[in-house]
Amino acid sequence: MTSAVPRAYRFGEFTLDLDGHRLVSGRGDIPLQPKTFATLRCLVEGQGRLVTKRELHDRVWGDIAVTDSALSRCIVEVRKALGDAAGQPRYLQTVPRLGYRFIGRVEALDSVSPAPLLTAAGSRRRSLVVLPFVNLSGDAEQEYFTDGFTDLLIADLGRISELSVISRTSAMCYRASPKPLPEIAVELGVDVAIEGSVLRAGNRVRITVQLIDARRDVHLWADSYERDLHDILRLQREVARDVAGAIRVALRPADWTRLDSVRSVDPEAHEAYLKACYFWHKRTAADIGRSVEYYGRAIACDPLYARAYAGLAQASGVAGFFGYVPPSQAFARMKADATTALSLEPNLAEAHACLAAVHLFYEWDWQAATERFLRALDENASHPVTHEWYGWCLLVLGRTGEALAAIGRARQLDPLSARAHVAVGMALYFAREHGRAIEYLELALELDPRFPDAHCGLGLNYHALGRGDQALAEFQEAVTLSARSPEQLASLGFACGSAGRTDDAQALLAELEARAAHSYVPAVYFAAIHAGLGKTEDACDWLERAFAERSSWLVFLRIEPWWDRLRTHPRFTDLVRRMRL
Image (cartoon, rainbow, N blue to C red):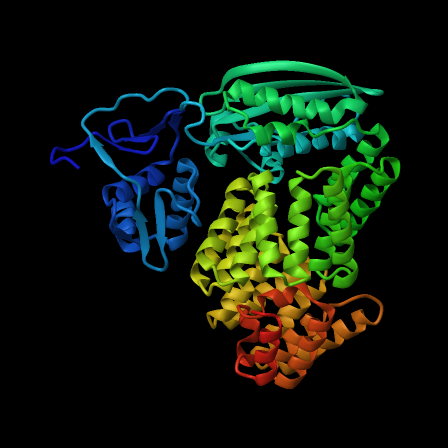
């Protein structure tokens, strides 16, 4: 840096204009709130060194008393503006419990010169969001069809190597949103946006698509398409290719292969598939059951429909992971359907991810899981679920830094998803970074205050920190919001047992036993409550049953704080050995 007083700082594609109190990139101005701007300035001026939380408080707020959460919100906004991920930072590195370090190379400037509108094609992956397409049919019952087109276009664009595509969950938050596009661009960290509409009439569909420079709200390209429903998948791939051309993204040979590997599909099968996806995204046990039903209908109508098999595989696996059905039943079906999908469409990323999940959560074949996850990400690097599952795999293997980066990438692709924030929070919980975990779980509750998993995650971290009353309150809330799901009952029972509330823990055990008399309840939940009660032998007995069930939760055996009381017990160490952990 120069000795003269600078007027701006440049780092990467960004310029921090001190006179204009603005952040400028190659795509135009990025609006920042005053405190967020001040936080970023403080970090940039401290480039390379640790800037403590106390220093940030003093420089940004002065004598005003604020909580750490105010600083956390500013840091989140800084990361959004820079398109930075906490798990894999390019600019801002978190130093746990202490503060932050700006790690980008900074150049001091005595003037501000504007950068070009768009970076040269191929210089970096272009970030993009497909906003919810508008249903022009006038029939609200057709909303699933319009949403389905949006979903599948997101999937096809994600197959293009040079694109980073925001997930469906975050994109759908902007349905009919009054927010201006530049504000949406900052919130999602994207360069360009796609908007469009769908008009379905009988067996014909008309699609209009427009591409917009999201930072400046400038239209770049538009087109319309009309096809028979038999050709709907070809139409989606055609739109994806045209969008890539409009953004000036070069398609690699592998991209062409992925986008050209498509066939006509029976309209009735496609309609059933879209309904299945609609229910799948609701993620409740009942809705996952309905999605399985509709995926089955799609396959019955068109036995060569690869994506329907992949969807059925994913729904089956999630049902097994969360304990809705026994693992042997769920993961056997997941493997069979994923294998069928790949025999029909060998480049289908979602099917590769499902096979990887079987290797990880059921077969406990760590090498096969790792290799298959990498293949899935090679086919679609914008699929957040694959990044998350791969992160769990890395965490199980003790590759904690890489795991947090992978799960952080999932959150970056799905920045408005409470579930994605919970995943980061739980990864940090397993890594024993409970303070940071709580920050992400609180962000999840800002997005969805009624999300049981976020409350449960907070409870687990509060418990690990010895904040028993707060932990019990969060567990109680999770139980209530989940309509007393077995998973949440087990967490509450573990906490009650650990806190010496033996009668409460025994009552929760009895409730799970009553539930198990007429429906499947994973053995690992019983083990957790017994572990909380300090009943080591009973806990080990139930863990042996979980091992026989091949419970997916056992992959976390080595890192789950639930089992800390059992770690030195010979039966527990033998179980860890048999799982090759």
